[in-house]
Length: 290
Image 1 (cartoon, rainbow, N blue to C red):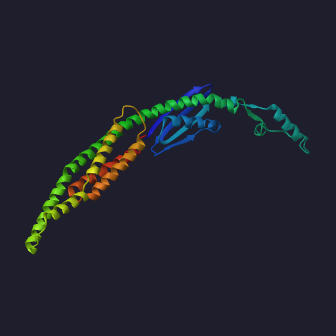
Image 2: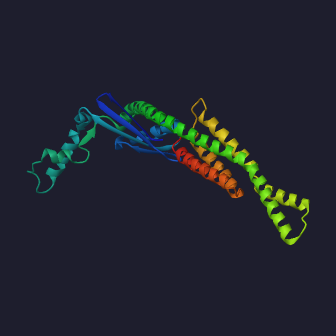
Image 3: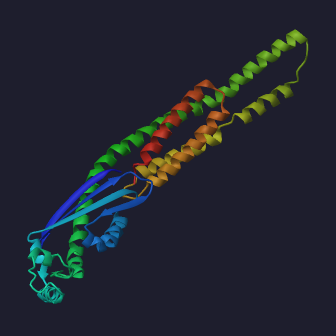
């Protein structure tokens, strides 16, 4: 499911901003965009994401800014002195003057006042607290989307149930109509060829046809899948059901295809086409469900 959340805080002279975006994905995928100096936090952040999100591509972006960046560094005067002494000791450079900007750019002249470990230790609780706040906002947005999604899935389930009831009521009539057509053709042949047909042969032919087009088991299994589908939609507590719904949709489509291949009846065929269209819609929407 799609969603967005953000949070920010100010702590000891540093402003932290974190945003979370989620997109549909069959599996969980975390994409973390962190300042280079805070990349050590990625493992903690991804672990927290996996605790709270089961499915989707989740992108976390974190930025920081400091009130006074200059306070983070200090000049190593001993290093500057060593550079100057060595340069002046070189032949032909005894009277050389040095530009301050050039000296500050030499390796080791500027050093951080706070160690990387210290910054990480200070930022870790702040980053995780911001992540939880941003995820709460993201979940609120996803919940609103989920309500509309649940209604659409329920509507598709109702459509399938209605068409399945039509198929169940129509199926016995198909055999009866076949029996009438078969008797009519046989009577015509008997009149034309003066041939006698045993009643047992006629009954056997009708029984074979009825067995070949029997869809009672498929109707029963599809009804069971619909009941289970409804139970998942109506569950009182939150549980990840996206993959389960996708699997159920595949099983429902399997039964619908079997019904379509077995029955030659036009009315049943039309109803089956509508069922398959509704199942395809469910499969599309199930990809949006966590």
